[in-house]
Image (tube, rainbow, N blue to C red; front, side, top):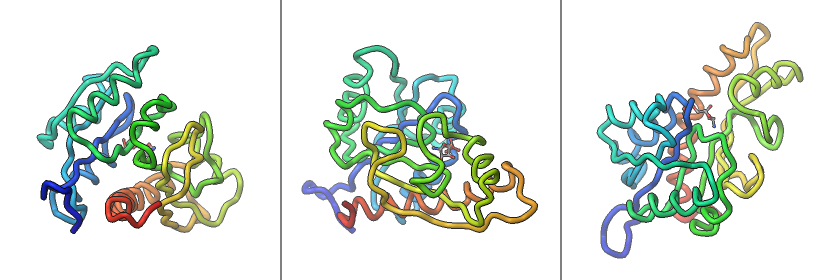
Length: 202
Ligand code: GRF
């Protein structure tokens, strides 16, 4: 287990979105609590107290912060929230906007995202939620899965850390496929964080 120079476990920051359920945040928090990811959740940052993921974070007893992610100072506010919580890694979990470039500069190669398909296919602007699974089915793919990747200035384009795959079944609907992929996401995200913290990536 890799500890910081002061002997403490590293801290991860989790940035959720307004509409996400918070299930990946929960999976990361549980992996930290069980010790399978050698880290602590430093802070869950949400754009709003109305976000469902915010309620989940509160139920789990996680440290939380609300940060206004609009306007020219959004990046500085996000950096401040993660630095105040001493985070060395930032995980996007249901955050749909492009991250301000200054956040990426403040945490170089230390911002991760999870996407519910096998990138580079079925990614990019507007490709989120059920649209992704609809597109996978419309394309007649025989498999799908999820991708954890480093975040850069473009949607869903950073280097891939980990992918997990599952079959697409003949009678799948977007909803059944989404549920199968979501189970993979909850395994993939903690494992990817573990690898990045262990220095295995990049
Ligand atoms: C997940 O499907 C993830 O891949 C995508 O947004 C969704 C968030 O879901 N980036 P949840 O809020 O973690 O349940």
